Amino acid sequence: MPSNSGYSAEPYGTAGPTGGRTPVEHTGGHPVEHTGGHPSGGRTPVERVPVLVVGAGYAGLSAAALLAWRGVPVLLAERHAGTSVQPKAFGVNQRAMELLRPVPGLERALVEIAEGVGDGGMRIAIASSLSDPEPQMIFNTREGDYDFLAGVTPVPTVGAPQAQVERALRAAAEELGADLRFSTELVSLEQDADGVTALLRDLATGVETRVRADYLVAADGHRSPVRELLGIPVTGRGELGRLYSIMFDADLTGLAPDREVTLWYLRNETFSGVIVTGTGVGSHVLGVNYDPAAGQSEADFTDERCVELVRRATGLPGLEVKLLDRTAFAMAHVLAGRYRQGRVFLAGDAAHTMPPTGGQGGSTALQDGCDLAWRLWLVISGQAGEGLLDTYDAERRPIGALTADAQLANLAVRMPPAARADYPEPLADPFAAILGYRYHSAAVVAEADDDGSLLEDPREPTGRPGSRAPHVALEREGGPISTHDLFGSGFVLLTGADGGEWARAAAAVADRLGVRLTPYRIGGDLTDPAGVWERRYGVRADGAVLVRPDGYVAWRSREAAGDPEGALEGVLTRVLARPAH
Image 1 (cartoon, one colour):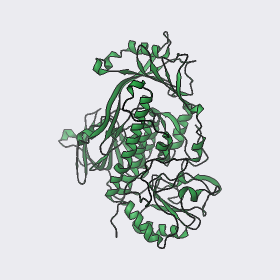
Image 2 (image 1 turned 30 degrees about the vertical axis):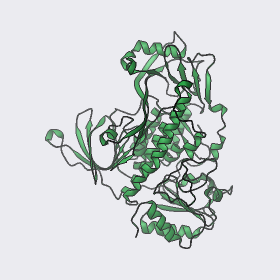
Image 3 (image 1 turned 135 degrees about the horizontal axis):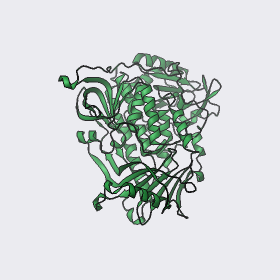
Image 4 (image 1 turned 180 degrees about the vertical axis):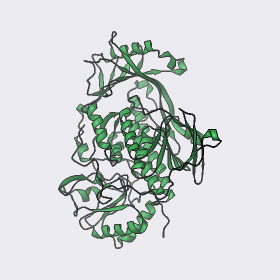
């Protein structure tokens, strides 16, 4: 799938924060150290690392990759032998791509995966089988007009299965130096005021290792043993059903386009479920609903029954079927009551488990991991105070709940009308929840007239503090560049043509506070051919906008200030939860 534009996927190069990306020195944590012997010698090895991640799904892998990219040593433990085999979640939305693309080569790798899958076509239909002559088409990207996205974001939507995206994330994290340990389970966990102590077990050898970490990211799935251990309460509708997933290979020529992903909701006299075709992984996936309360179990899905279910789903009684993989999933709506407890943070399904209807669960998990990475980096490197970490819960939990409820509403739309009682209504504009959600926390200096809204229309951005920084197509040295190409490696101060005083203030404040802060003057090295920057960011030519590493507006001054250094230092001190001088 081609990118929306010619914007660089790797804006940082090697030239440093003003025009490139350099490794970030790690000043606040500790290197990994081994201080013990083998268990057979009576002592459990002890390792020291700034961040321990539990779980190698989307949230855990994105956290590990973005921490490693920022120079923070990270250890990830995953009890499975590798990343996912099943396609699972499909697609990476635009906001997740914006957060992932600073990692060198990652956007290109994901786009190449998507190009191998197809041309970006996506359909959702309700039918009795793939041979149903009159399927009910409820979504078709070929009938929608998404041209507006090129003016809203510089990134493409990546239509790729989770299995392949996870492999790309794993490769990026390992290349950047993250220590990823598969077939390794978390046995126990304790925390105190200074850190977390975890006992890990290598499932292949039985060797146990004690890890002392400053912080732990619990990305350990919807049942989250870490969440249970900490006693974090949950709300939501709980488990909504069970699905047995059958990954198979078969010749579906004439029934399913090879290069167009189709999600079929199947309803017939034999079973109800879903089948996904055209994912580009050389196979298809059939999910069959089953009910343990009715005495049904995974044991019912013998090889013979799985083959017959595939034949019924396709409407081809004599189809040759090769079974590739099988597993069971619980579909649920579960919301954690808090995302932080002490030095432990919940991310992904551990924080918000949602039905797959709508396809935003995976992308939300990716965003959690990326979001934690920049906050932990700032605290561990000494640029921010510990209080910055509280803003993770304040900002991400409302969005997690909103997205989970939207997915629940989408599920209701696919249910018989009588079963939809007490379900939420679908969002009027799904893209507002993808690219227009807003944050409200101590890491944002809200303006006096802020209405506290959680969503805004990304087609009409406001540039308000707490909103995603608008994409503006700029030029640098004759080539195209997006405002979003400037974000990721630290704070950015955007100023207009008359903002020279702000740029000088930023250099002085960055040096005084020891904060990664880069000024860019639009009208200087960067030009705005369309002349829209001031309007989209809501400032004059002598104003300034402070953008966080996640591409969100932390603060803005619509015009010049009498004391730009004082104003900027005060804002950064507040946003970074640092003690005032």
